[in-house]
View 1 (cartoon, one colour):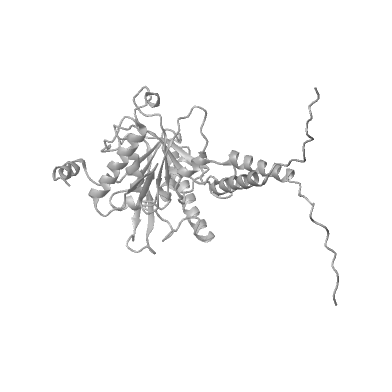
View 2 (cartoon, chains in turn yellow, red; view 1 turned 135 degrees about the horizontal axis):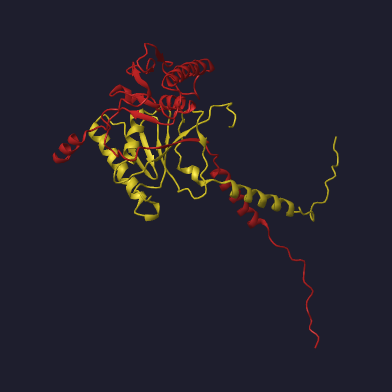
Length: 168
Length: 194
């Protein structure tokens, strides 16, 4: 059975764009404000758990820290550099640590405002390591930081709060 | 003099390109949005006076509670486990075999792991009290004897460190893996021109 459908005349209908544009701009502003580019320096790892960690917030005046990432298979990621500590050959492992030291020294530079009166560096280093990374690799990284040419003594271990733990 | 101003026609701004750009911006921010994965950190200071020089022996006149960590059955990934010992107690604490990390483990095994840590904490606390009970005067010592101790997972060491910190023992000594080459081996290697 044929039926004549009634199609409304759409020629002159115009959508009012203003509310949509308003909302869209709000979204843009929201994303701009919440974006945290600093998280880009973290390599994705399974962090160890600890109840005693402090909140990862810098106080005013704190020097910006370095993040040294250590993956479960022994790769170190620092800034744009990558080093492999898991080699079978102790000589190559040693080279990797030396290279890490050199790159830390290079990134650290010679800025006198970053040096404490006693000669040590004000820059903290965060060791952002996988729970399964071998402990000796972490120790090597600590030794590299404490090297007399670098003198970074402030360390932070990145940890995760156990699920369900309440805030202090 | 009268000017003949033409009546303005109905002009309309073309919104389409602007909306396109704004959507592109939204998509960019959406994709680059990544929530922070860490929320906690343990802060520490390395000993300033020592530098790279290893401390050969730990002065015996310090009050301390020592936890030793070993890695056992490393050849088989499904059997490897961490063994912990407090001072010279006969008791050893065997962490679950083939531990795959909290994210991948079953609740049973996580509970088992936590139970071991809690019982270790009571022992450490008892030892600390035997040393006078002031947590700041008693050092914690974490020893991972080379060569196998170096293979203990970082997460297990952090858990042990956490025991000390929970008890207020903020002075913790790490002892263990040396650098892959001794300084003598390093200079010999440099001389050989490798």
